[in-house]
Image (cartoon, rainbow, N blue to C red; front, side):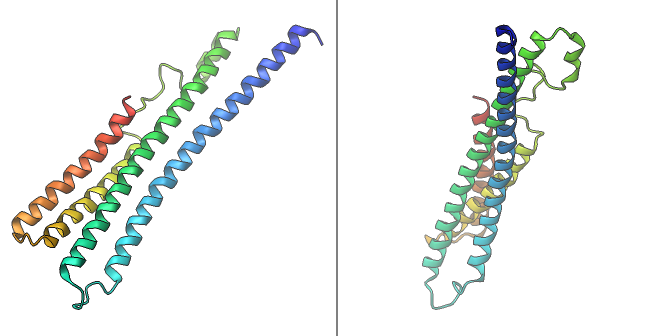
Length: 198
């Protein structure tokens, strides 16, 4: 086999192998994204169900202790929500990097191809690739779910904290709970956006 034909075959095999690897990493990022958000939803649901099905409401327990414990547990769930949001943003970024790498290989192939009509075969190219931060995407909607639950858990943490320290003003308690829950929700979405706008 002539040397230049052997080199060409080697380049084609390397490009195909690289393209296959990149496609696999993009697929894995999507799979991991689904697993991460599902794990958080199950963790929150299971822990909340376990908390409210226990005998912690027995009158033998100190109400300050119960409120403090609930506040701490709901705060931990909020921290887990923040970590989940960070993971979702990193997985979206990993998917986007894989798409850029695939498009780089496609651009090379198109540049080498003598068939100009072949360019119309691809829906995405480097210029038309969806943005890394895209509010109308599955990744964003998963983040909204996590942020919503994090807002609820942080609001609950604030509510039980107020009960633990003996702050008793029903209107103020609910106002602080709602405001801090809403702020936690918005902060989660901001964390997601800021990590993808880099």
